[in-house]
Amino acid sequence: MAEEEKNEAEAPEQDEAPEQAGPVLTAKEIDKMNVPKLKEAALAYGGRISGVHGMDKTHLIRALKEINDIPLVEAKRTSKIDRSAVKQQIKTLKSMRDQHIEAKDGVQLKRVRRRMKSLRRKLVRTA
Image (cartoon, rainbow, N blue to C red; front, side, top):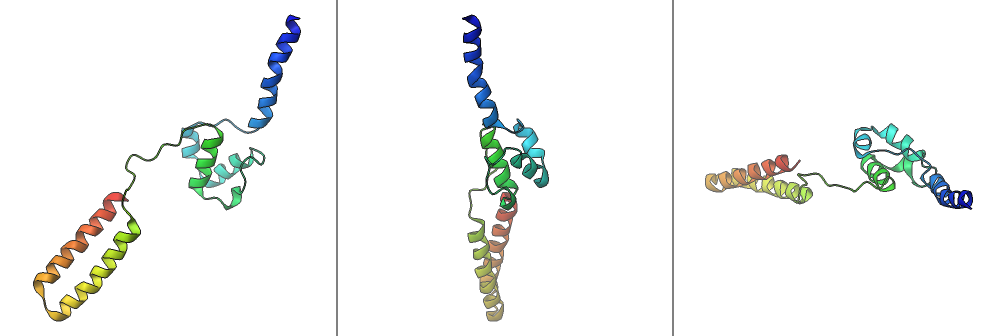
């Protein structure tokens, strides 16, 4: 009886092993891998991750971390601004700058240039 109980207890563990069917990776290992190695590791999971060849590095890292039950942690300095909107503002300010140069309006020109400079700094700081 004791042997039967051991066999029954071991049976579910053996069923879980084929589900894993891939390397057990840590978060550090996943983050240090390059794209070809990430794709190799994702393919080793035998169909549990679909579309591996079309994924970029961030998608591959996210998929591997989900399969290995590693919590997804965002970067500490995640940018909360909309970079494309800031770039669009800079473009409009450039056209305003050109208008002020043609009109020889030094005061407004200085304001526009200062605003452009602050927006460019903002982009660099959040990069």
